[in-house]
Length: 195
Image (cartoon, one colour):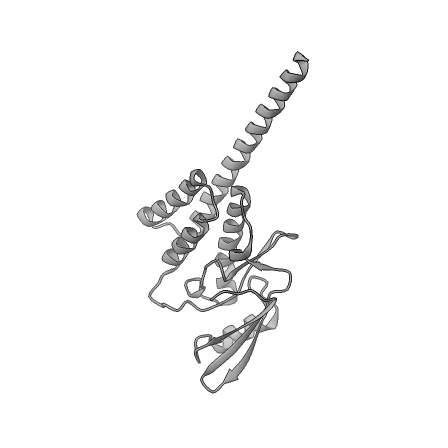
């Protein structure tokens, strides 16, 4: 599944989205997910998503770790809130095609696609998404995600714990960026004084 249009359509099996989920997802009251429309077909349902202003992560050129971890944090915050709208977080497909980003507003939204494998739990779904995001990061920055996946497995962490871990990583990246800027400034100050 590769989503490239502002308005894309996807055919789903009949019953893969419950009636009350359709009401929530099509009403516009749930700002976590892309606005959706549903059309019943003989062999299932045609779902249309309005992605105007947003780009699928697969198409985003994310080359800074700070931006990648901000997107990860916002994605997990959305997943964490899904239960407020009676959407089971474990049913949400998380991948580079279903997570959308608006560069201007820095907002993240999810194109709700029910997970194809119901036996896949939320932790495995998140770990797979982290693996996909690793491809957007430099080798040194990938270590953060590897560590998170390991800790998630070893310590049975849930979404709130992962959000906190990402927050810590974002602070480390901010501090290291700030420290390197200070070093650059002091180097340039020293060079000016030598002239």
